[in-house]
Length: 98
Ligand SMILES: [Zn+2]
Image: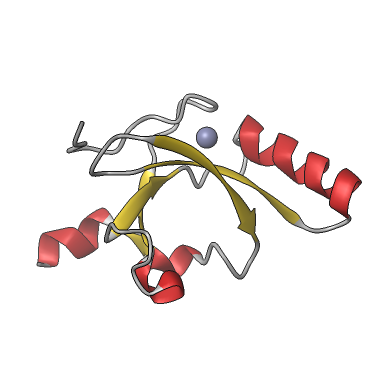
């Protein structure tokens, strides 16, 4: 099912944001963007951070994401700050300019 508007993250009830995936994966996702929860207070993010730090000794965490073309939900490992640079968030203002 195609998604037309940002889904709500089931973990923190915050609206997801469009995330431009092409700069860091050359478009390998098969979609121009993903809907990702960028709430740093998201229980998934906070819990994931603890889990990864304790188990792998790395600073990373999980983010909730949704494929816009299918509505498929995923949880991805977000190595910060490399993986999730917030500058790649497609803001609502940006979209209106196009
Ligand atoms: Zn969330």
